[in-house]
Amino acid sequence: MTFKVLRDRLQWLALGLALVLFASDWWARSHYVDFVNSAYIDSTPRIVNQAWLLLLLSTLVVGILSFPRLPSFLALISFLWVMFLCIQGH
Image (tube, rainbow, N blue to C red; front, side, top):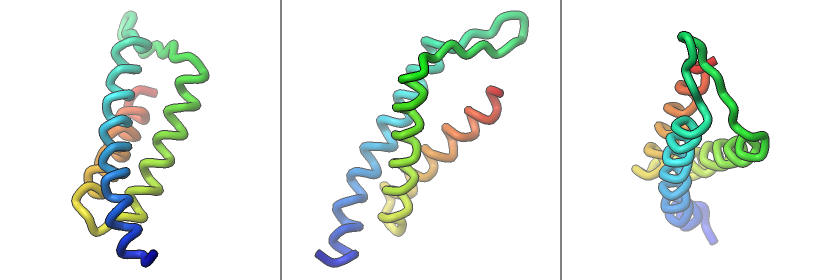
C-alpha cells in the first residue's frame, strides 16, 4: 500500500471523524454547559471528556495524514473550531 492509497482511504475517515467531533461537541455543550450569572459552568462527566479528547486527537492525526484532500481540510477546520470553542469557554 502506497502513501497515496493510504491518504485516499484516510480522507473519508477524516470526514467522518470531523462530523462526529463537531456533533459530539455540540451535543456536550448543549447538555452539560450552563451559564449562571455570566459564569461558564461545565459539568461534563470525566468519561465524556476522555472520549472527546481521544476523538479530538484522532481527528487531528487523520486530518494531517490525509492533508491535501478536501475532507482533511474539513477535519482540520473542525478541530480548530472545537479548540477555539474550548479555549473561549474557559
